[in-house]
Image: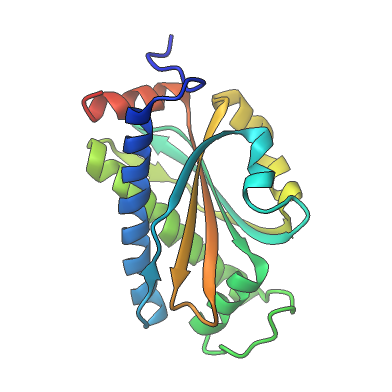
Length: 207
């Protein structure tokens, strides 16, 4: 039986989740800066706890084409993570990484670009897992990430059943990074610990 009710608003829970978002975003910007060889600034992330059915609307609609990087999380915290990047933002990042910043943003990704973006996803998700581990003292182990490019709704449908089996509520962290090319890069991180892991995380934080 869970010690918490995620269906009820509790400001203490949200303070904890926001802190995870802030530390994770700071870690991610530092890692991206090293990877891209340029300064990367991160805006204050927006953190929400949502029903799965509301995720599509929260990220701007299920019809937009996005790049999704999905992985499993195991260890003292179990669950899944999904990073969503708008396709053009992902294309800018891939171009910078591979020395082709002027690439056509509408072109499909090459195999090497997909590999590079998977590594970006791995770095960003690991930054958040490290934030959780630092704040809670709990160990986590991510799986090898898998990448796909499709409409947001199609990407979300793949892990939907698994997400639903673990928890009714999903943690959505909206990130905005500047310094990754023209404009900013918007990314959405969906974290779904199982309900026992939520309990474990909050207990480790003294709640």
